[in-house]
Image (cartoon, rainbow, N blue to C red; front, side):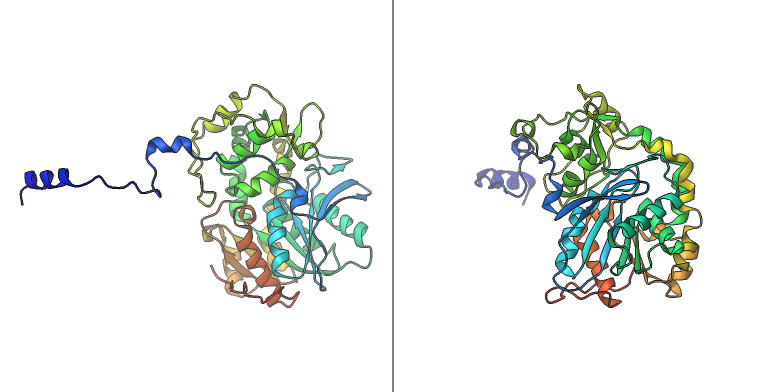
Length: 393
């Protein structure tokens, strides 16, 4: 059959029905816009408290106490984040095991207020954690598992090495390794300068958080980002303004350089964002209403102290340990040897960003829940069907 005959036959066929799963490019403009409105902390935690120590008042968030006896998971966020970074994870893990979650706003972050906001040295932050536990529980502290992400993971290791919590039974470190962390410090100031300094609204901040790739899970960004910015006029954390009035929720979306950068489906990871995006988004803000809660660039003198010698300190921790990474390439030599010797459990979750616990909270909850049950620190809630994450890379 000649090409001419094929063309003639095709022209006589009825037109193909459009596939609804693959809309035409012209239809893309009619798709529902992504919701960047902030969410209240109370949707995930039962209560918030201000814990007083000799250094100041520390904001903590608590989940519902377990029905049966279980440990307290004390969670420390990374630099620039807040305790609300653990919101989705707390909601997930309390469904899987018997435990209570305690998320802390570290000094200089969130709604915590201390005498010296700029002292972010490792010994000071570690002592803060010990003082908080002492103030809350005294000499009757329950079994405690320390869980920390990035800077918070390093502080967990320092707390454990200094033996500041007598009832400590386990340590979980999320996506921080000495070697790669120290190497990244050289470009940290450049990264901080690339971020917008101000936001015109809370929704604008949430949208930037997702579009820039800081957090790939929109639901998590909606609850965690308000804990990272303050109102320039009042100086108060933006969480104090929630819930927003109805008219605030109808705000026009920010005109970013690439308006189609975020896919409709939240499960799809966002594409790489051009380096010019943060600058463009900042320039488009007609009103400078919110700024970052903490200026991380001023804490540079403490960065090296967080991570120097971290690998050996982690290996020296006497309680069972879990290291959860976003990529196996992040493992340095000493940790590789230690893992082969069985000194700690290693788990790698690929296809997620640095904020592993925000991007994939359910899977992180499964990994940590399995680690806790396997070490007999607690029991599974329900049938325990989630127990499937064996130590692996």
